[in-house]
Amino acid sequence: MALMLSGRAWPLLIRRGGGTDHRMTTRGYTIIELIIVVVVFGVLLSIAFVRLGPALEHARVQRAATVLATDLQYAQMLAVRQREPVAVVVSESLKGYVIRERDTATVHRQRFLGDGSEFRLDEFTATAPFVEMFPNGVATATTTFTLGLAGYQRQVRITRAGQVRVIRGP
Image 1 (cartoon, rainbow, N blue to C red):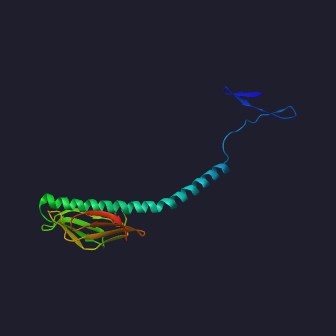
Image 2 (image 1 turned 90 degrees about the vertical axis):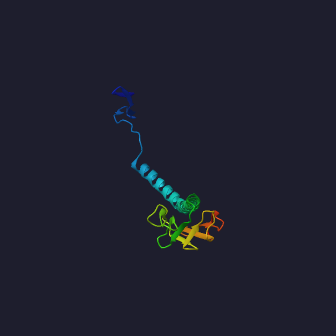
Image 3 (image 1 turned 90 degrees about the horizontal axis):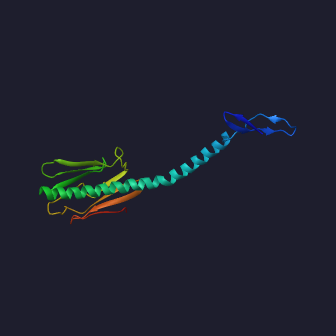
């Protein structure tokens, strides 16, 4: 037995006494089922966030180290192209550095790696306050830059011969 409404047949419940129950059957989820799904989803998201947090910090340090290595190679290229020494001046307090011409102090690139930047590093140190790149490709001294965030570190080393490498932290 079915009830016809708006061109659709709705089943009717038949009582044992022979009468019919005119309530339509309902389909869907109860509010309790929806709350359970939301709670389970929230727990899974919080677990994923706790596990991915350190990986995101490590990626940020690695990306900053790669940018620094690329900028050091850029400074070498500038020195060769302009046939004049180029200086990389480090500011540990600002967590940044400036690439400039040694004699005229013309700034070619300025980069900050601290809180106000996309990297948000809490550590940036160098073994020397500045490094000069000469047109023949050599640097004044081997210098190691240490970049870190929440205990995770990477180092970028430029040798006197001009080789730039990203290495693991100490």
